[in-house]
Length: 61
Length: 180
Image (cartoon, rainbow over all chains, first blue to last red; front, side, top):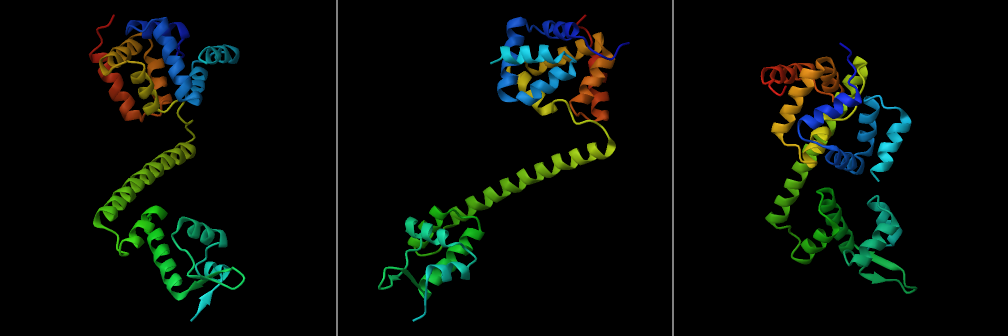
């Protein structure tokens, strides 16, 4: 089994507990506000390309 | 009578001149006199007062508190002292926490393990802030374990959770697995 969790998989797990896109957006925003470095670290851990990380973080502002 | 210039008195206590100017401004230690040309002139009495101020400072009282104590007989009340004791206890706890975090950092450095991607406390705090309660978090673990067991393991390790705890979380994630 591939160790790496894809973003789709990640999203699916959050949907499973009732977190839709709006809720996930709100969570990113909170994360960015309170712990910008942790947010960056998490997105890097997901192995998102740097451009995608920048885009997500910019949307939180 | 022995007198001190501001610089001399400051030096005697290892303080700076500006500190004494500040104490004067606060009304904490006004010089007892002035020289003919207007320079501050401190007496032995001022010297003793400064000794007490320094003593209270060492015990962590604020300048405002010290002013209050000196204005009301010179003995701090039990309430104030108790409050300071509580504050020092809180500081000690805080320092212990720092010590624990530093020791953990050092052991990670020594073992060559990377630092956590996100600290687990912070991670849980963010989930809770966004409204994910404990039950939902359990469901989420179950789902993670079911879909990507190795990824689940890797993520828990990345949060800096110790191995034994990771194993424990994964065990109950499997036992209660019913989401799918």
